[in-house]
Length: 84
Image (cartoon, rainbow, N blue to C red; front, top):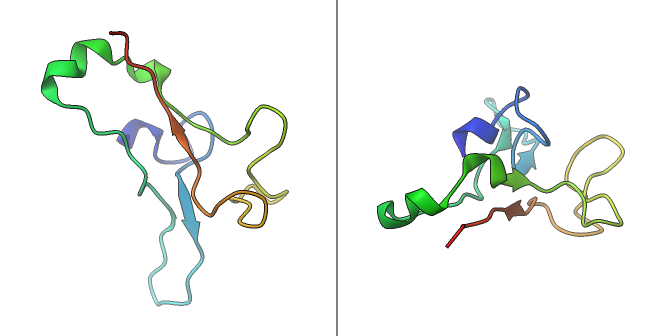
C-alpha cells in the first residue's frame, strides 16, 4: 500500500483525506489497506491494486479532488485481484 501513498502514484494519493484543525495535519492518509498472508503473495500482483476514484459512471471525488462524503463515503475504496 505504501507504493500507492502520495502524489507520485496513479490515482488519488490516499484513501482518506482529513483537514483537521490540529497543529499537525497530514491531510491524505492510507487507513484502508490490503493485507495478504505470505502463502498468497504469489497470487497477488501489485499492478492490479488501485484506489478507486469512480464507480464506472460517477466520480467518488469532489471537484476539488477530495472524497465526496455526500455522494459516497469519506474513504475511497481499494480494488485488487488475486490470481488463484
